[in-house]
Image (cartoon, rainbow, N blue to C red; front, side, top):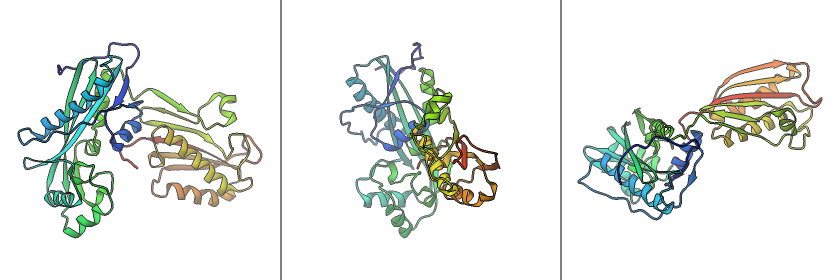
Amino acid sequence: MPTVAVPADAATAPRLFLASGSPRRRELLHRAGLAFELSATPPVVEVESDQLSACELALLNALRKARAAAQLRAHATSEIVLGADTLVTLDGRIFGKPRDRREAGAMLKRLQGRTHSVVTGVALIRGHACELFAVSTDVTFRRLDARAIAAYLSLINPLDKAGGYAAQEQGDRIIAAVAGSWTNVMGLPMEAVTNALTRHGISTHRRRHVGSGSPWESIVGYARAVRVGRSIHVAGTTATDAQGRVIAPDDPAGQTRFILEKIESALEQVGASLRDVVRTRMFVTDISRWEAIGRVHGEFFGKVRPAATMVEIVRLIEPGLLVEIEAEAIVGDHLG
């Protein structure tokens, strides 16, 4: 199979298929705002070799995964199959997925206090052409004794992770520094992946919007949330259900909680979370009740600390509504 880059030449973007069972790769693509489907993939045994570099081995395994899925799809040019493989390397030794927790502990013992490289190979197959690339990131571990290693392994499942660890799961316990792509350490270098997909006509900057079922959305003509690229804007949200009924009348705290849960749901539908929120605006009909509203806001955003504004207004669209909240978010690279 030739290894060449294929520029986008169709007016309609090709469909993207992910040839991976990794939940982390699925989440990274979802958070990037990419529409994709999981591809049925025959079992592919990952190659292990002392004769290949980590980069060569990761590219080979990524290609094998993508090729296996592409063969099932008859190599359609209207589709792109993405395969990936991530390895950890230190002093010329390659660390794949550990067979058991004992081997995971031995890997972490070798990596502790040192700087290793995380290499991800990526294969994009479109028709009978393939684009291959690899990204390497340097990761420095903290010094870890046997107790710290055991404590970390008690918190995660290391068996499906190269090197026996996950940067996005309790990573601050073991990682001191990361030089390069953070998402690469999680299994997919999103900066390079999105650039490559853009060349094929698949963009993260397409406009997406979701609704919450409120009758006002169709009457007025607006979306609950709109995402373009990494930016998300959530419309002013009140405590009304899908039938337009006011929830928790005369209870500002109850309305605030209902609103923030509705905002959280809208964010999740476009691949974001409350952790991505950078600004909220609260419009209240009685500023003397600010504390009840503010305390609930703090329950949801106490650790996030977005920029926030609370202002008193004369009234909202329904007499029983006490609070309306807007939110803005920028999707980051973290997971969970």
